[in-house]
Length: 110
Image (cartoon, rainbow, N blue to C red):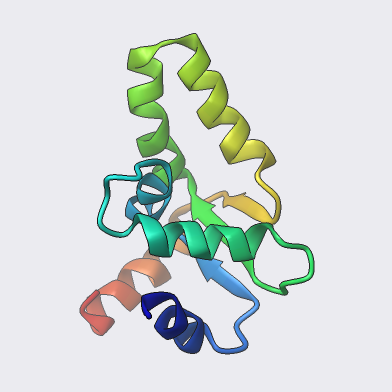
């Protein structure tokens, strides 16, 4: 079962950084990764689970584009998700955070 593999990979981690594709998959049931994204965010939302989620402001901007184009209700829904989902937090990023992140990506081939 893929969720078991995800939980095994997370191990005892207490923090995870969610990328745009994970957050989009959570909201799109037709996405191939939807089940895993839903499982991950379900874990994050539970106060009994020590796992806390984070996302970058770049991901927030990407998630807001379509709702801005679509209309007020969709924008309100996504804004609420980004600001009120339990145990999910946006990270402010500046060049002092961006450079180590880029270095990690460049050296880890991700």
